[in-house]
Length: 136
Image (cartoon, one colour):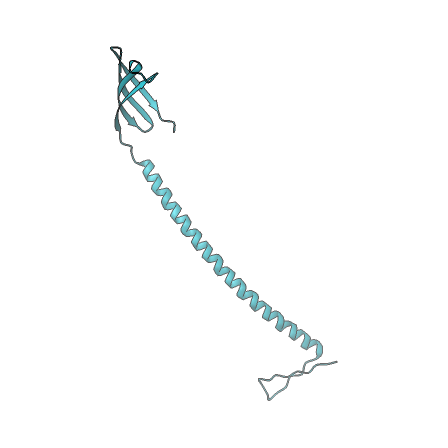
């Protein structure tokens, strides 16, 4: 069995193909159409991946700016801070067991240095010097 085909765009000449050649031509045309579809899908996928990469780059850029800002803050010299406190402490909630105190303190980084004056209700007092390190 043989198939004969001709070109409809050029009506002046006819092309006659054998069955095996026409089958191969059809296979090539179908494969070409499939390749065009695959190419279009791959192009769309590449565009999507480029958009994802662009968004990731902008996130990384924002993180780099944030890290730079944090590093600048860490590199700045710290100011010495002064604090004062007054308070009361005791073993029981009765006035004869309460102690009143005043504390002056200087803070540098995580270290506190200061003096404390304690007035004990039973007519005595005490001065205390202290050094503290802030753990958290």
